[in-house]
Image (cartoon, rainbow, N blue to C red; front, side, top):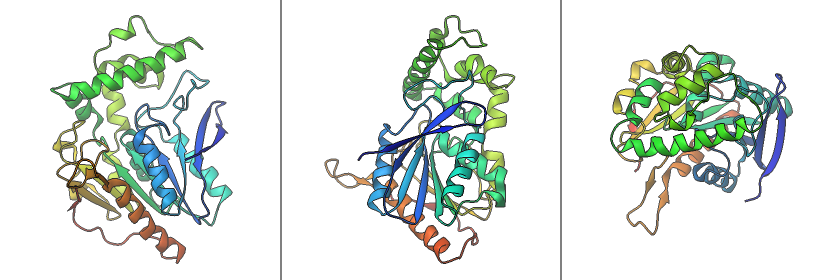
Length: 309
Protein backbone atom coordinates (compact mmCIF):
# COMPACT_ATOMS: atom_id res chain seq x y z
CA UNK A 1 0.00 0.00 0.00
CA UNK A 2 1.47 3.33 -1.09
CA UNK A 3 0.38 6.40 0.87
CA UNK A 4 0.39 10.01 -0.32
CA UNK A 5 1.70 12.49 2.26
CA UNK A 6 0.31 15.99 2.68
CA UNK A 7 1.82 18.52 5.06
CA UNK A 8 -0.71 20.74 6.82
CA UNK A 9 0.43 24.11 8.11
CA UNK A 10 -1.36 24.90 11.36
CA UNK A 11 -2.57 28.36 12.42
CA UNK A 12 0.07 28.60 15.18
CA UNK A 13 2.95 28.07 12.71
CA UNK A 14 3.43 24.38 13.47
CA UNK A 15 2.64 21.48 11.15
CA UNK A 16 1.30 17.97 11.03
CA UNK A 17 1.29 15.38 8.25
CA UNK A 18 -1.61 13.54 6.66
CA UNK A 19 -1.08 10.14 5.03
CA UNK A 20 -3.67 9.43 2.33
CA UNK A 21 -4.87 6.12 0.91
CA UNK A 22 -6.85 7.39 -2.08
CA UNK A 23 -9.53 5.27 -3.72
CA UNK A 24 -12.46 6.22 -5.94
CA UNK A 25 -15.13 6.82 -3.30
CA UNK A 26 -17.75 9.29 -2.10
CA UNK A 27 -16.81 8.44 1.48
CA UNK A 28 -13.73 9.45 3.48
CA UNK A 29 -12.53 8.07 6.82
CA UNK A 30 -10.07 10.02 8.98
CA UNK A 31 -7.87 7.77 11.17
CA UNK A 32 -6.43 8.88 14.52
CA UNK A 33 -3.59 6.77 15.91
CA UNK A 34 -2.66 6.04 19.52
CA UNK A 35 0.19 7.25 21.73
CA UNK A 36 3.40 7.59 19.67
CA UNK A 37 1.72 5.84 16.73
CA UNK A 38 1.77 6.64 13.01
CA UNK A 39 0.83 5.08 9.68
CA UNK A 40 3.63 2.58 10.41
CA UNK A 41 1.72 1.18 13.39
CA UNK A 42 0.28 -2.24 12.60
CA UNK A 43 -3.30 -1.36 13.55
CA UNK A 44 -3.14 1.91 11.56
CA UNK A 45 -1.75 0.30 8.43
CA UNK A 46 -4.30 -2.48 8.83
CA UNK A 47 -7.33 -0.20 8.91
CA UNK A 48 -6.05 2.00 6.07
CA UNK A 49 -5.70 -1.13 3.93
CA UNK A 50 -9.05 -2.57 5.03
CA UNK A 51 -10.90 0.67 4.31
CA UNK A 52 -9.37 0.81 0.85
CA UNK A 53 -10.41 -2.80 0.20
CA UNK A 54 -13.91 -1.82 1.33
CA UNK A 55 -14.01 0.99 -1.22
CA UNK A 56 -13.49 3.91 1.16
CA UNK A 57 -10.80 6.56 0.91
CA UNK A 58 -8.93 7.14 4.15
CA UNK A 59 -6.41 9.55 5.60
CA UNK A 60 -4.36 9.18 8.77
CA UNK A 61 -3.68 12.30 10.81
CA UNK A 62 -0.21 12.08 12.36
CA UNK A 63 -0.29 13.97 15.64
CA UNK A 64 2.37 16.66 15.98
CA UNK A 65 5.84 15.11 15.99
CA UNK A 66 4.66 11.59 15.10
CA UNK A 67 5.37 11.48 11.36
CA UNK A 68 9.12 10.97 11.57
CA UNK A 69 10.47 14.38 12.58
CA UNK A 70 9.95 16.69 15.58
CA UNK A 71 7.36 19.43 15.21
CA UNK A 72 8.40 23.09 15.29
CA UNK A 73 6.95 24.21 18.62
CA UNK A 74 7.78 23.20 22.17
CA UNK A 75 4.25 21.90 22.63
CA UNK A 76 3.20 18.64 21.01
CA UNK A 77 0.06 16.54 21.29
CA UNK A 78 -1.74 14.91 24.19
CA UNK A 79 -4.85 12.91 25.02
CA UNK A 80 -7.12 15.94 25.32
CA UNK A 81 -5.82 18.10 22.46
CA UNK A 82 -8.77 18.49 20.11
CA UNK A 83 -7.84 21.71 18.31
CA UNK A 84 -5.75 20.00 15.63
CA UNK A 85 -8.51 17.50 14.93
CA UNK A 86 -11.04 20.32 14.59
CA UNK A 87 -8.75 22.12 12.14
CA UNK A 88 -8.17 19.02 9.99
CA UNK A 89 -11.90 18.19 9.88
CA UNK A 90 -12.61 21.77 8.80
CA UNK A 91 -10.08 21.42 5.97
CA UNK A 92 -11.49 18.07 4.86
CA UNK A 93 -15.02 19.45 4.84
CA UNK A 94 -13.95 22.52 2.86
CA UNK A 95 -12.24 20.38 0.21
CA UNK A 96 -15.07 17.85 -0.09
CA UNK A 97 -18.28 19.42 1.28
CA UNK A 98 -20.58 16.73 -0.12
CA UNK A 99 -18.55 13.67 0.88
CA UNK A 100 -19.72 11.42 3.68
CA UNK A 101 -17.11 11.76 6.42
CA UNK A 102 -16.27 9.40 9.27
CA UNK A 103 -13.51 9.22 11.90
CA UNK A 104 -11.97 6.25 13.67
CA UNK A 105 -9.69 6.73 16.68
CA UNK A 106 -7.54 4.23 18.54
CA UNK A 107 -6.62 4.48 22.23
CA UNK A 108 -5.31 8.04 22.75
CA UNK A 109 -6.76 8.93 19.35
CA UNK A 110 -10.09 7.49 20.47
CA UNK A 111 -10.02 9.67 23.59
CA UNK A 112 -9.29 12.74 21.44
CA UNK A 113 -12.13 11.79 19.09
CA UNK A 114 -14.77 11.24 21.79
CA UNK A 115 -13.80 14.41 23.68
CA UNK A 116 -13.99 16.43 20.46
CA UNK A 117 -17.37 14.92 19.57
CA UNK A 118 -18.68 15.88 23.00
CA UNK A 119 -17.31 19.40 22.71
CA UNK A 120 -18.82 19.92 19.27
CA UNK A 121 -22.11 18.07 19.94
CA UNK A 122 -24.43 18.67 16.97
CA UNK A 123 -21.85 20.92 15.27
CA UNK A 124 -19.21 18.21 14.67
CA UNK A 125 -19.91 18.15 10.92
CA UNK A 126 -19.20 14.44 10.42
CA UNK A 127 -21.48 11.50 9.73
CA UNK A 128 -20.14 8.66 11.89
CA UNK A 129 -17.38 7.76 14.33
CA UNK A 130 -15.72 4.68 15.79
CA UNK A 131 -13.52 4.67 18.92
CA UNK A 132 -11.41 1.65 19.87
CA UNK A 133 -9.81 0.77 23.25
CA UNK A 134 -10.37 4.21 24.73
CA UNK A 135 -8.84 5.23 28.10
CA UNK A 136 -12.01 6.95 29.31
CA UNK A 137 -10.45 7.88 32.67
CA UNK A 138 -6.77 8.73 32.21
CA UNK A 139 -5.91 8.75 35.90
CA UNK A 140 -7.26 5.24 36.48
CA UNK A 141 -5.48 4.01 33.34
CA UNK A 142 -2.15 5.49 34.47
CA UNK A 143 -2.54 3.66 37.78
CA UNK A 144 -3.40 0.38 36.01
CA UNK A 145 -0.35 0.56 33.75
CA UNK A 146 1.88 0.81 36.81
CA UNK A 147 0.73 -2.54 38.21
CA UNK A 148 1.45 -6.17 37.40
CA UNK A 149 2.15 -7.33 33.86
CA UNK A 150 0.73 -4.07 32.49
CA UNK A 151 4.07 -2.50 33.40
CA UNK A 152 5.50 -4.25 30.32
CA UNK A 153 3.23 -2.13 28.12
CA UNK A 154 4.06 0.94 30.18
CA UNK A 155 7.80 0.34 29.72
CA UNK A 156 7.35 0.03 25.95
CA UNK A 157 5.39 3.29 25.70
CA UNK A 158 7.82 5.10 27.99
CA UNK A 159 10.77 4.14 25.80
CA UNK A 160 9.00 5.56 22.76
CA UNK A 161 8.12 8.78 24.60
CA UNK A 162 11.66 9.21 25.84
CA UNK A 163 13.12 8.66 22.36
CA UNK A 164 10.75 11.28 20.93
CA UNK A 165 11.71 13.70 23.69
CA UNK A 166 15.40 13.10 23.02
CA UNK A 167 14.91 13.82 19.30
CA UNK A 168 13.10 17.03 20.11
CA UNK A 169 15.82 18.14 22.51
CA UNK A 170 18.20 17.78 19.59
CA UNK A 171 16.35 20.52 17.72
CA UNK A 172 15.33 22.97 20.47
CA UNK A 173 15.43 23.70 24.18
CA UNK A 174 12.25 23.04 26.15
CA UNK A 175 10.79 25.14 29.00
CA UNK A 176 10.80 22.19 31.40
CA UNK A 177 13.28 20.45 33.67
CA UNK A 178 14.56 17.58 31.55
CA UNK A 179 17.41 16.70 33.89
CA UNK A 180 17.68 12.92 34.07
CA UNK A 181 14.37 12.42 32.27
CA UNK A 182 15.55 8.92 31.28
CA UNK A 183 15.01 7.84 34.89
CA UNK A 184 11.27 8.50 34.74
CA UNK A 185 9.71 5.17 35.62
CA UNK A 186 6.00 5.55 34.88
CA UNK A 187 3.65 7.30 32.49
CA UNK A 188 2.32 9.32 35.42
CA UNK A 189 5.84 10.59 36.17
CA UNK A 190 6.36 11.45 32.49
CA UNK A 191 3.07 13.32 32.37
CA UNK A 192 3.93 15.15 35.61
CA UNK A 193 7.38 16.22 34.42
CA UNK A 194 6.86 16.61 30.66
CA UNK A 195 3.31 16.45 29.27
CA UNK A 196 1.61 18.66 31.85
CA UNK A 197 4.06 21.58 31.97
CA UNK A 198 4.52 21.65 28.18
CA UNK A 199 0.78 21.99 27.66
CA UNK A 200 -0.31 24.31 30.44
CA UNK A 201 -1.55 21.84 33.06
CA UNK A 202 -0.78 22.14 36.76
CA UNK A 203 0.39 18.54 36.92
CA UNK A 204 -0.46 15.02 35.80
CA UNK A 205 -3.69 14.82 37.79
CA UNK A 206 -4.91 18.15 36.40
CA UNK A 207 -4.06 16.93 32.90
CA UNK A 208 -5.90 13.64 33.40
CA UNK A 209 -8.99 15.36 34.81
CA UNK A 210 -9.23 17.90 31.99
CA UNK A 211 -8.23 15.62 29.12
CA UNK A 212 -10.31 12.49 29.83
CA UNK A 213 -13.19 11.96 27.43
CA UNK A 214 -15.50 10.31 29.99
CA UNK A 215 -17.37 13.48 31.04
CA UNK A 216 -18.08 14.35 27.38
CA UNK A 217 -19.81 11.13 26.33
CA UNK A 218 -23.32 12.36 27.14
CA UNK A 219 -22.95 15.29 24.73
CA UNK A 220 -22.08 13.29 21.59
CA UNK A 221 -24.60 13.95 18.80
CA UNK A 222 -23.02 11.91 15.98
CA UNK A 223 -23.66 8.16 15.46
CA UNK A 224 -20.72 6.63 17.32
CA UNK A 225 -19.58 3.06 17.90
CA UNK A 226 -17.25 2.29 20.82
CA UNK A 227 -15.40 -1.05 20.69
CA UNK A 228 -13.82 -2.15 23.96
CA UNK A 229 -12.39 -5.33 25.45
CA UNK A 230 -12.98 -6.17 29.11
CA UNK A 231 -9.49 -7.73 29.31
CA UNK A 232 -7.72 -4.58 28.06
CA UNK A 233 -4.40 -4.49 30.00
CA UNK A 234 -4.29 -0.69 29.86
CA UNK A 235 -7.30 -0.32 32.14
CA UNK A 236 -9.75 -2.05 34.45
CA UNK A 237 -13.46 -2.66 33.83
CA UNK A 238 -14.10 0.26 36.20
CA UNK A 239 -13.34 2.73 33.40
CA UNK A 240 -16.03 1.33 31.07
CA UNK A 241 -18.86 3.88 30.89
CA UNK A 242 -22.30 2.97 32.19
CA UNK A 243 -25.31 3.25 29.86
CA UNK A 244 -26.48 6.40 31.66
CA UNK A 245 -23.11 8.02 30.89
CA UNK A 246 -23.62 7.67 27.12
CA UNK A 247 -25.69 9.81 24.80
CA UNK A 248 -28.39 8.13 22.73
CA UNK A 249 -26.04 8.40 19.72
CA UNK A 250 -23.39 6.13 21.25
CA UNK A 251 -23.37 2.36 20.82
CA UNK A 252 -21.01 0.45 23.12
CA UNK A 253 -19.89 -3.03 22.06
CA UNK A 254 -17.96 -4.98 24.70
CA UNK A 255 -15.85 -8.07 24.11
CA UNK A 256 -14.63 -10.42 26.82
CA UNK A 257 -11.31 -10.69 24.98
CA UNK A 258 -9.46 -8.44 22.60
CA UNK A 259 -6.76 -6.78 24.67
CA UNK A 260 -5.69 -3.31 23.65
CA UNK A 261 -6.43 -2.59 19.97
CA UNK A 262 -6.40 -6.34 19.33
CA UNK A 263 -9.68 -8.15 18.66
CA UNK A 264 -8.21 -10.94 16.54
CA UNK A 265 -10.48 -13.99 16.44
CA UNK A 266 -10.58 -17.34 14.66
CA UNK A 267 -10.24 -20.98 15.70
CA UNK A 268 -6.67 -21.42 14.47
CA UNK A 269 -3.62 -19.18 15.17
CA UNK A 270 -2.33 -19.67 11.61
CA UNK A 271 -5.63 -18.37 10.18
CA UNK A 272 -6.49 -15.23 12.18
CA UNK A 273 -9.68 -13.29 11.53
CA UNK A 274 -9.19 -9.55 11.94
CA UNK A 275 -12.62 -8.94 13.39
CA UNK A 276 -11.88 -5.35 14.42
CA UNK A 277 -11.20 -4.09 10.90
CA UNK A 278 -14.22 -5.95 9.53
CA UNK A 279 -16.52 -4.48 12.18
CA UNK A 280 -15.25 -0.93 11.62
CA UNK A 281 -15.75 -1.15 7.85
CA UNK A 282 -19.24 -2.62 8.30
CA UNK A 283 -20.25 0.18 10.65
CA UNK A 284 -18.99 2.92 8.37
CA UNK A 285 -20.66 1.41 5.31
CA UNK A 286 -23.96 1.27 7.19
CA UNK A 287 -23.76 4.81 8.55
CA UNK A 288 -22.33 6.43 5.43
CA UNK A 289 -25.01 4.75 3.33
CA UNK A 290 -27.55 6.60 5.47
CA UNK A 291 -25.65 9.86 4.92
CA UNK A 292 -25.61 9.31 1.15
CA UNK A 293 -29.38 8.83 1.22
CA UNK A 294 -29.87 11.97 3.29
CA UNK A 295 -30.76 10.15 6.53
CA UNK A 296 -28.29 11.81 8.87
CA UNK A 297 -28.69 11.72 12.62
CA UNK A 298 -28.96 9.28 15.53
CA UNK A 299 -31.47 6.59 16.24
CA UNK A 300 -32.12 5.46 19.80
CA UNK A 301 -29.09 3.77 21.32
CA UNK A 302 -29.24 -0.03 21.66
CA UNK A 303 -28.13 -1.68 24.87
CA UNK A 304 -24.42 -2.54 25.19
CA UNK A 305 -23.63 -5.70 23.26
CA UNK A 306 -20.81 -8.19 23.16
CA UNK A 307 -18.59 -8.38 20.09
CA UNK A 308 -17.26 -11.41 18.25
CA UNK A 309 -13.84 -12.16 19.83
